[in-house]
Image 1: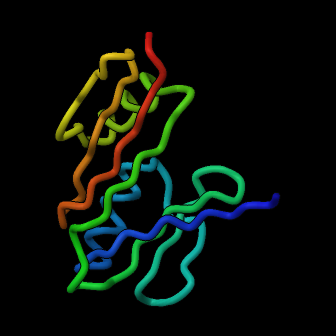
Image 2: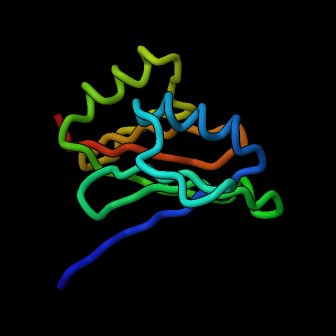
Length: 113
C-alpha cells in the first residue's frame, strides 16, 4: 500500500510559527502551498505542515520516532530550542517534547539506550 502522511499543526502567527519550525526541523519549508501554510518533508511521503487556523491553534500533538534520537535532540539544542519535557518510559523508550509558541506539542521518540 502506498502511503503519504500530512500531519497538520494549527497556528496563530504564520511568520512566528514558520521561524520556530525552521529552528526545530533545521531547514526552511520544503514548499509553501499558499500564504497561510508551510510544509516540511520529514521523510519520503511524510510531511508536517503548519496552517494558520487561530481558533484551533495549540491543540496538536504529534510524535515522530527517530533512529538518531540523541544527535537530533542535540542539533535542535544547538539551534536554541530545548524540550519542554523529557521522558523515559518503563520499556526504555525516550521522548523529548517541544512546544511551539501556540502550545502545540511535537515529540521526538527514540529507542532505548
